[in-house]
Length: 432
Image (cartoon, rainbow, N blue to C red; front, side, top):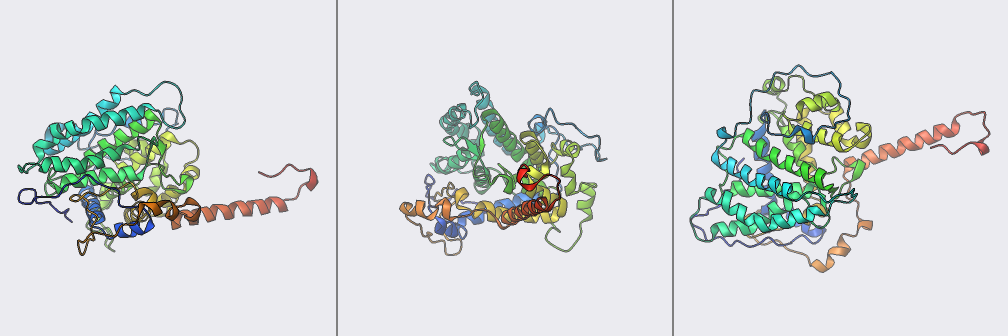
């Protein structure tokens, strides 16, 4: 699985700032047959293959972002060997280091834009200042950190690359206007990462899975810090019926760490995967002690740790879909199922992909087979095609879970009605 490499030396590429093409549900169907989505899915598959049976190096992930200070910790831990890899920046390739330096600039920028004082339920307005500063400085960071990695010496190629790639990095950290973060922003960072591969700023042949985990680990730490610092709202969350308020891709990468890419999707069993997991079954994510133990090694557990940090109560109640998945599926099925769900719940949903824009080079609005421009509906019909009263964006799994809970409540109500009581029916308090 290889991401296409763009010819930067011998082609006069028609770079252009990304523009909105998805105005309604018909455009989503066009998107599903586009060159752009093919490149996104190819980059995702490459990531899954590379991170297979790999651990996030010690010291990469910030444990404080996923630990709840008031949560009691059980002593039930898995008997796992100590981590064998440590985060040594000197051992990273120069290209990966420069990408990390680029992300570090955004972290430093957050230090310079502290949140405004006082409790704010719907997002801290200082986040808009952070986004404004990011937009002003991002071109300079491209030039400082990424230009040395750009192989082409053709005049205008790097400027063209910035004109398209900047949209995806700017869109990877939530919405300035809505003060929220969701799977569409996560998708934007995946597109930015794919852009680095296509333009050979990162060499996909020599790039190690551990290096990919470091890049995405630093990205997710930055996003979690943004959410906590500026109290960002979930973007387009399905609430209790969704997988997660903010993330999806992180679960794909984390599950892929725990499976053998050579055997996943086949009937073959992998002794390599069994030995790597050392008894780390999906149900262990429900144990807060094991989650804490694994949160700095694996992105799946890291995401679960963040849920425990921001949500209180029984895990099965505030995250029923994750609870069901982790108590009934092996890692191999979880990895494949998360990818399939990403296709259905992120790449195929208008509320998410309407914010994904298209340039002429990196992610063109072209048919994947004919390479001709895809049809595009009129922006004037956007509102009538996407009226929320006429559209239910919940997945089959979410609808099934909703039906299950609704039936349970109805059965409990019937049992309560039949329950004998010495108190006359007219004088009893209503059952809740």
